Structures are given as structure tokens and as C-alpha cells.
Image (cartoon, rainbow, N blue to C red; front, side, top):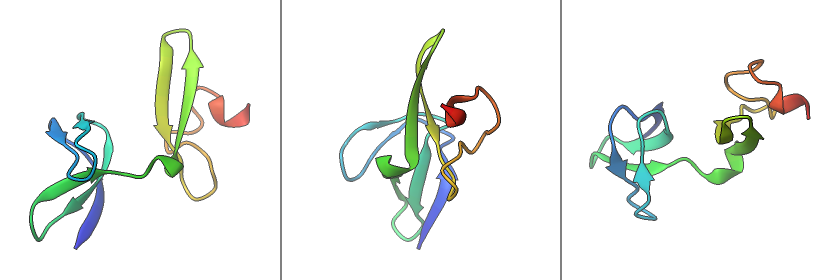
Length: 74
């Protein structure tokens, strides 16, 4: 069974081998205890004063943290 959650620890994506960082949204497989990064189609990258940041979008296309920085309104 796959569960969507925020990663609490560093890890490695079982599909791509990419680094999973704490705070990344992952799909966690409870049957074999592996994780994979959530597909990129649910992300938006915004370049602000502190450099690029990636945010995760909900079903309406808004950031999960919205309204925060205003990147969803651009």
C-alpha cells in the first residue's frame, strides 16, 4: 500500500536513485518499506531572492503552503 507523506529522513528513491531529503513529498510503500519521490507533475519551482525553491501543488494547482510567497499567483 502506498502512502503519500513528507520524508522525515534522508533516503534514496527506489525508482530513480535520487536523493530524498527531509521535507520532500514521497510515496512510501508500507509492504516493503521503500520510498519514491512524488512525481514532478505536482511541483512548481519558483526563483526568489534566496534562489530556486520547489513547492508541491494541490488539486487546484495552488501550493500546499499557499498563500505563502505569492508564486501561485504569477
